[in-house]
Length: 135
Image 1 (spheres, rainbow, N blue to C red):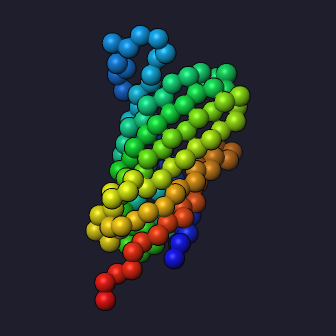
Image 2: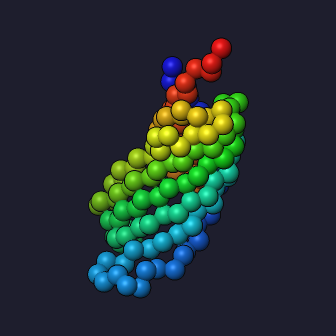
């Protein structure tokens, strides 16, 4: 059975040193620190890589974040994998639970998270499944 969670989150990005050995397109590197509120009550840390020219509406990024806390009353941790692209100002974003990354009561977690940014505020919806607890 698919479950649904929603809420808000705060995010802080901090630039990390770039790889100076790369020629051509610059790849930016950032640390991520998030605090999720709502049905997912958790903290996360991760890293993001990005390239392109967001000011002109064209860019891409990938990220992995480790989330630790409580989801729908279940405690544990899991990883989220982000893949995003912006072309001509249009966004395409995918955020999914990394298979096999769930721990504790979140072992076996699978699902996709949707990020919503409106009026400078971040929120999420999260559709997920958890295996049935052993009897």
